[in-house]
Length: 168
Image (cartoon, rainbow, N blue to C red; front, side, top):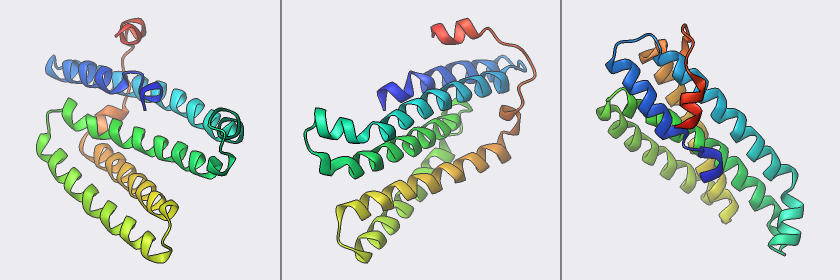
């Protein structure tokens, strides 16, 4: 996740929590800018992984049969990065109680889906697919929870110093 993360979580926590603490109107602007930047870079990385999966598994890893696993890994990276970013919002707003409950719910959903998918067909691909699906569900739940509880984060009213954010 290193290349797809680019420090976005730490940057978001720093700037959003500082804007909230200082009671400025910039929290939404920071959140929106960092989210858009993260999604753009994540899309490029995931798309490159999918497009070049055959070449990477054939020439670099020298196991072309792992091409599907590599594609599945890129989808995993997408949802893992998104869910981690959204989860970090609760750290930025200092709502750690919600983080605890989200982690509990995520673990339950993950166990149910992984066991369910493996019981359908005993294959490690199905276990990974169940895990990826659980991350996709959690990402959606997190998005709607943030949108409901912290709707101001989706309102970018003020201009921000993007160079300062990028340099962080």
